Image (cartoon, rainbow, N blue to C red; front, top):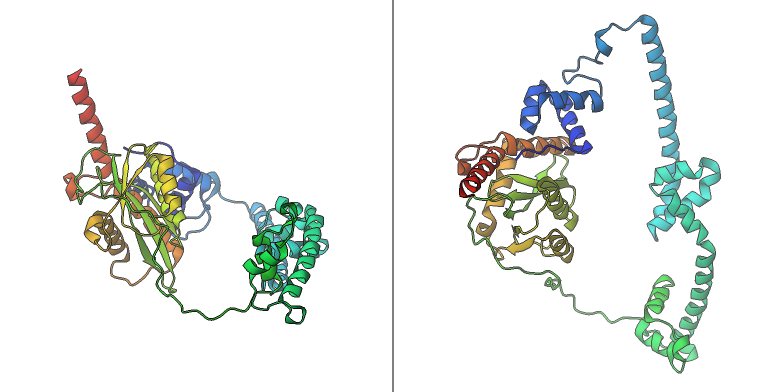
Length: 415
């Protein structure tokens, strides 16, 4: 089932793919992405950079030649814009150079706020917040809370002095005392209302370098994951086609980059139609990666309520955050056995196919932007133009269209 509504992000990426592909045609790119040529032309006019992919220079305005006076005015405007951009970049460079020493240690966000406070008269709050990437509202909230922080800092200093006494052997203290014993000493004989919380004691001791002396312990290098959840295998290696939007499989694969870094691709594949319903690329393998892929599938399908999602027992799929998202989307989780690639072989096969077809024997993509564009085009082409043997050599979109038509006819006859 072809998608009718497209986000601005999808439109911009389609235009970027068209403009960055040498020799590309509107017809070819539109066919790969499953859209009409007219729609892509409209997006190029709206979001395009105004240059052709063949490098032939700016596109003429409405087909008319540019006059000499207009050309001079345009070039002067471009020069002024370039000079303004140069000045802006130089100012931002100077700001970042001065900010570097603020980020040497401590709380990074607080350091950014402090930097803005110390340099606001020279550069202005707006510019500084933009360069160090903080919200002005957050900075002003931090500034307004300064008196309260100062008061708490003074109280913490008094508490630190009391802790030093309790750790001073000359005054009957013990240098080996850590937060639990120090808390007990501080609260000994003190009414409940005046007691100190052990978390505050631990924080003050940490901030004032008052940690107690510790004996060295044996290091345990292998720590089993006790937080991950395990789910039964609801697929049972049954990867047969059938009704769309009922069963999904997914996996993560890496995309090697020439500079030695990696991007990571998470997929969400419809077993019924083999459609790549959702995917996401990122430079990390945190839970957000697989969450975004599942959300993309939910957006494209409209709803995933009542479906099953099958994966391996990777930590991101076993995380509480991912389980909460599945519960929110009314998706039932399924997992294969540990160490058994066959239990999720279809998802792994799709990943292998993607890298084999995009890299074409090369060891890596030249850069991250190229890798992302390649995946963007391949993922959409996979649904709109790539024939699948399991589907009788038709595309996932064609299969879903035919399945819907057959189901509707069957229901009509039954009625």
